[in-house]
Image (cartoon, rainbow, N blue to C red; front, side, top):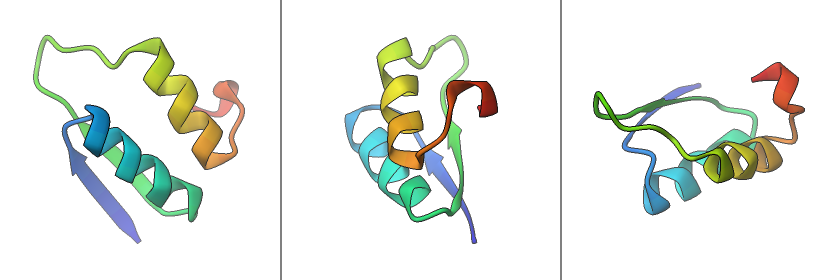
Length: 55
């Protein structure tokens, strides 16, 4: 299943990470000009069980 999470803040990042952990295809949509923090990227990679090189 493909899932689009609108916003990658605390709530969107958490639920998106949980869905990615269940091996769903998760895409995050963020406003132009906003960046996802490196900590969030590590958090999501950890939930998905993936190496950062795969992202």
